[in-house]
Image (cartoon, rainbow, N blue to C red):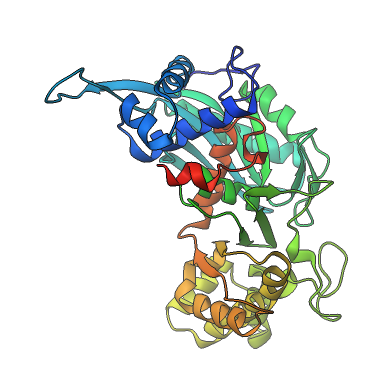
Length: 404
C-alpha cells in the first residue's frame, strides 16, 4: 500500500477554496455520488440541485484528488453519451477502534467496505499501546500493496481536544495528554485524525447516508462506559471545551459503585457493559466473571442469570434516557455498542422505559445500529475522509436534501 503524508487535511487540495459554500457544495456532490453511483454529471446536477457548471468544476477537482473516477460510457437514445462516475475504491483508510484493553484495526475503502480487520491487545502504557497500533496498521497496509492509503482515523473512548488532537477526558483509558497523533504520523507517514467514539459513530451515520432529513438526534454508545454524540438543529454539539456528550457521567442516584471519573452514582455505572457483568456476578459470586461477549452468548443460550443481568442493564439504560429526552428532545436515538448484539431482548425494555418517562410529547424513534464495532470503524474512516472541519459544520439544509 502506497504511503503518503499529506500536508493538507484529507480531501482538501492546495488550490481548493476555503469558501464555506463551496465546501458545502463539494460535500453535497460527494454525498449524492456515494448514494447513487454510478452516476452521470447531469444526474448529479439534477439530484443535488446544483448548476451543471458547478458540478463540472467540483467533479474535475475530485477526479484530480482521486476521490472519484470516471467509468463506463452509457448508451442513450440520442444526444451525448454520459460518462458514469464512481467513488475510487483504490483509495483506502486505515482505522482503529480503541478500547481500554484492546483495539480493532481495519482497512476501509471510500464506500465503507471493510477489506481487512484484526484485533490487537493493548496495555495501559500509552507509548507502547500506540506502538502496537502502528505495528498492526503497518501489517494491514502490507496486505494491499496496490491500494493508496489516504489517511488514518482513530475512534477513542474519551473526548479529544480538536486543537492539539489529544485526549483530554478518558476515565477508562489512561492515555490523557499523550500525543497519539504525532506518534502515529511519525511511524505511518500518514495524516491522522482522532475523535470520540460516539461522535465517530454519528459521523459514520451521516457520511455513509443513514441520517437523511434528521436534524435532532442523540447517539448512545454502550461499552465499558456510556458515551453520547449530540446532533441539535443539524449541528454536532461539542461545547465550550469540546467535551459535551459525556452523559454517562451524569449521576442518576446518590449511591452505588464509584465511577472511574471519581463520582458516585454515574449513569454508566448502571447502564454500561461493566454494569451488566456486575449484575451477573452478584447473582453468582462464586463463578468467574465472563467477558461481555461471553455474557451475551450465555443469554442467547438460555442462561436465566445472564438474561436477568441484561434486562437490568436495559432498564437502567431506559431510565437514564429521561436525561436525553428531557434535555435534547431528539426525534431519533441511535444505539451502538455491545447492547445491540442482543437488541431483541434489550430494545423493547429500553423503549418501554422511555415511553413511560417522557416529560412531554411523543417518544423518539429508537434504533440500534446493527454492528456498533463497524459503526465506530466507519466513523473513524469518515474522519479521514472529511476535511478537518467538515464534521463540525452545519449539515445540509432539509431543502437541499429534499431535492435529491
